[in-house]
Image 1: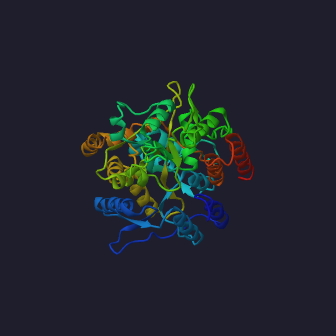
Image 2: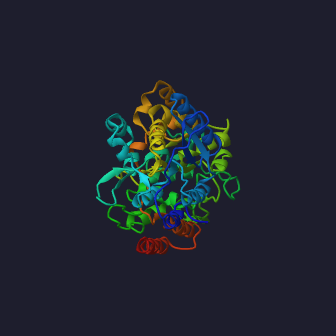
Image 3: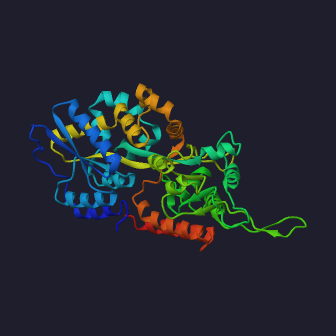
Length: 451
């Protein structure tokens, strides 16, 4: 199966012209139809439908139709076919690498173009978006090189440290771990070994062998895997090596400990590698902590129930002197070029509505995703939500210190390769140095063949 963005190369090859144009599609009520393709199912899909209904009630000229296309891979495949037939939607969710490719080949009408004729949005709304989110959606114009806002943020999540708050407080901790050393210490204290020895009944920590886990750890070490602006590969830099070594040390089988004049004693293992999602083992108290995105909020609630109190905090930094960051992920929304004028106007009104303070606050309260506008925090209902849910408030606090993955068109092609190298380290099949050297070669090869 193609990667999350790998399909775009196929799409670009298939397209021999712009998006479809002509007369706008109208519903039975005479309104211009604005179709919005997305990949959000369950409660998230219901929230999208709710927002679409609110948009439709807000005016009488346009009708937003939210169309669930399955998960992201399915959405991608259906979009390929639709664009080939010149029947792409007016608006769609887009990952950053996806919009980079679209933008390069002129298949999007940029937000900057719309904002040029919309002073109110340009002067009041744009500055209200969280800077890191707006930065992620800003790219150089392929012809002029001037920066322009291409898409707008939509369902954004940040990575946080999930903690069994009840267990942490029972152990006497008055604050969450802030550094790697504290992180390890709390994991050690949370680990429970049965009397007589054996495997722990509760581990302090667990992780998955995905590129995101390594990326988060690298960010907490003050580095990144690739500098997008310069193209410098940092995946095997000293800080990145230290990050993967630390992650490995948290889950590896430790060496036995021998005290002075004592016989050899087995050291306590404090973590392990899990192949599945971690909310279930967290809820069963198999682990005390794990790192994941805020998209896990609802799943934690379901898994934990009333068994204990859980919370989330910023990712611990390498040390007190390192200004570590956290990882922000999620899709944005873009408007395709070449639409009929009325459809284009309706798409713009819908995207503005979708990303308005009121709707991004509603979206956050319904789904656990982060709001994309700062002023959402000024809304009475949302303020009450933050006061009630300190975990969500803690996660929002990390937005000012978040960063994102490279948006380069070849990045998605190496994500799977990097995940395999992380996997090889975490399961002791390869040394960190060898794995990250291989990761560098994968990036170099993808970069060489990107164009």
